[in-house]
Length: 265
Image (cartoon, rainbow, N blue to C red; front, side):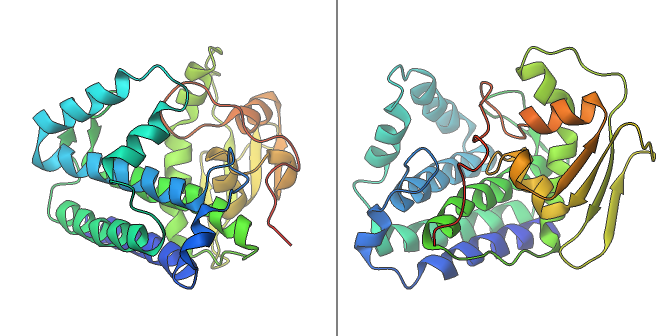
């Protein structure tokens, strides 16, 4: 788990480095992700990092926390709960709190067996999957901050973890959208940030996806529409998957419309 923990640490550091120079006022500026502010993003990440920590250290408290989440009926209730949880923390103080706890979470997961089964809001998951999901959430929600600030993110090959999560949730995308599961998963051919070639499955020119790993991650995390990224698809299964891809839990979400999520400037 040390490698995944270090990837999670690096993802957090990349976001913290972006936000370190900001004044507190800038944390209140809306992003293109549902008009969430950077404060909203950090509270959300911090809330679910704390939940992940409880997976390892206090299942009873995790169940109480999830009970509060499941009892929410107001569409904006989750943001309210996250604000209440952290007593109005905002700006640089929130950034430091989130960053410090992220390191605590990474250290905690680094020492456990990656196959350990952990309770969660949905089905139990492995420790490896849980921390990979935290990296994915940091990367995905962080994209909104990079976009809002007009900064181009420089990715590294640690996003392979997010690609793998996207591959692993192929069937989930179809199930959550009440679609029949295709018999054959598309062949995936991606170029890593380093230039290395990554692939999943057996080559099939009639059923495939090719492009950059960054673009694939952007689509499966729903931070970009497939029409706005460097991905090519062949075959109906590949096209449907990329149109509806969702590598995170919860009800079906609609990806951003073409052109909706673009960097500022």
